[in-house]
Image (cartoon, rainbow, N blue to C red; front, side, top):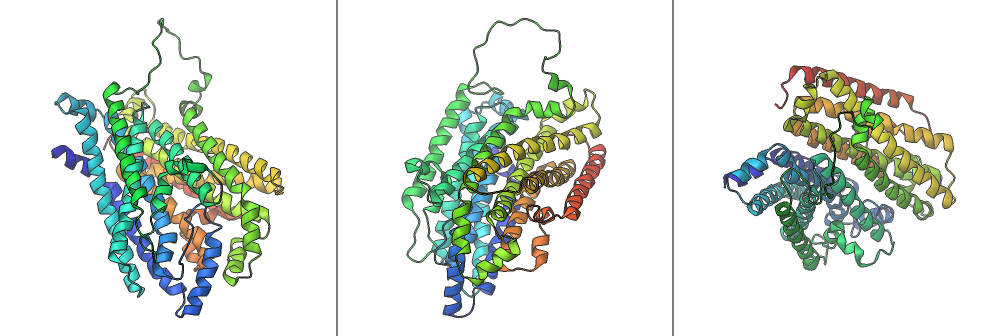
Amino acid sequence: MILFWLAVRSHRTGLLMTALVGAAGGLINAIGFAQIVGANPAARAHFAQDMELLGRQLTYLLPVPTQLDTMAGYLAWRWFGSAALIYGFWALLAGTGAGRGDEERGLVELWLSAGLSRLRLIATRVAGFAVVAAVSIAFTLAATGIGAAIGQEPLPFAGLVWQGLAIWALTILVFAFAILVAQLVTTRRSATGTAGVAVLVLFILNAAARSGVDVGVVHWLSPFYLYERSTPLLRGGSLDIAATTASIVGALAVFVLAVIAFVRRDVGGPLFRGALGKTRVEYRPARDPLLRIPVLAIVDQQRAWIVAWALGLALLAAFLTSITKTMVDALGSSDIPVLRAYFERAGITVYADFVGVIWFSTLLLLVSLFVVAQVNGWATDDAEGRLEMMLSAPVSRARVVVERIAAVVVGCAVVVAVSSLAVYLTAKSTGIGLPGGRFVLASAAVLPVAYAFAGIGHALVGWRPRVAVVVLGALAVVGYFAQQFTPLFQWPDWVNNISVYALYGTPMSKDDWSGIVTLIAIGVAGTALALVVMRRRDVGR
């Protein structure tokens, strides 16, 4: 029982932040719908027609919309489609922490030496997270229900419960998968990167199926597909028992595989090891020249992870660009005022503008999550003794801060370059002409955003390592959706301006150097603050 409460306690920060984000998102979306949908059936029908046409062009991100003239239908599309991403990302970080983070801190070895079995250890961690996830989801559902009641369209209690069960099943499946991946590598950072790329591929697989691409029965492998099979809030909808059961059974199966892998491997080592060959003692330094160059040494040690992110985003880039013409033609041919207003406020006039708005807004979010994963690694280094080892080399604290942030920017540059090249080549093959100079500028302008997030992230790590990842992740997700839906619902400009991404502007169509300079200034301020807090705090606290 003590170990169970320790498992629950280890997720308290994630519980607090996801509950707050989920509750705020559900409440705001429900109240917002009541304000914009209209008061009579004709206005509702017109709104539903507008939103459904637009929503069917956003299937690369959100589920296929239906019954948008009702509060339940709108929330099922707009909010619960987004909540799945939030909880999936949290489960990914929590799973790699449970599967490898405790081991890096020496806790697993301590517990095993006390007579605790490996099966019980992993089972307790999964049970603890399952309880925490249920509590967080309950807060999200309660706030959403309150918002719907305020909007004079209460949601059915049973529908909310079944919707929560579907989200919970998705969350547990991703958590179990992250634990399994953690058995295959040696560090939490590697586990986070590997599991993150795999989950991204599964999300793209489901997005492709939603967009009409025939992917065959393989789409059943995606937990997001299984989640979206359930529509308990819609009229005539229900919880898909087969899909939800498949998610829960799949989580149990992955859990069994994780236990088997944990039992078969050594503590501190991966499941699969290469054959040990004969070696001889070497007294010379490593032959890799990059390990002797500041900043590049960190990048070199993460090369496999950076390459995996670059290839994953390149695949997503090619997919989004390939469907650009279809999406723009469908939207542009409609004579719906809301869509025309959306095009005008988003700055979309030709195919190239659509690529600029859709692809670069998506890239900003994903690059931000790349930075969040790096910040998670910094917090782990602090808690698990690696930072202390680096400082004893000796390396100054200032150098650690500057090198970490610089390495993140260099890694982001590689990811952005590869994915942008995929966009350019795919656009060229489909007959979309991208202005070369503007496209290069828009790609390069992503790096100040990464720098701003890295500076803020390191300042948070120096202040409160445990909350850094969740706070930075919430900043990224909330900022992304604020930017995306401000032109859609014609919200005031201040809603868009709360997003860091608003400073990026629209470099594919016009210059906004003041925003870029502001992003760099935020990065500099964050770096300076990180230097101050790093000097003043004790390592490991």
